[in-house]
Length: 99
Image (cartoon, rainbow, N blue to C red):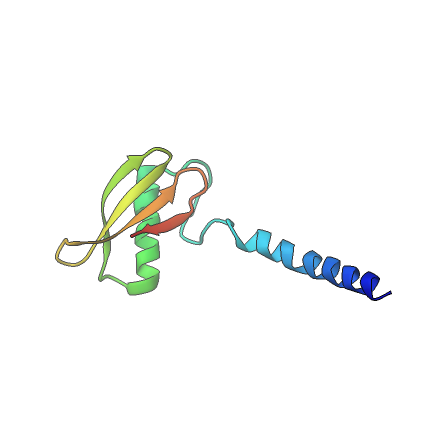
């Protein structure tokens, strides 16, 4: 009887956790305004929107390079010095920093 309750508890836990995980992971981002394949201009705008949401006008997107199916966006500071690079997936619009 204890085994049955344990199995039911695990199944209920998975039924609650898995949908939340699926919706939370890989669900895109809030910095994109359109659908379809991300263009170079959209990659720049997405980076600007992201940077504005975290730091205002201190950082801005610099050079953008196409690397396979991703854009590699150089983020620069006020003096033009490279701070970090952002990787933007062309198909999903997901953004990730590259350290």
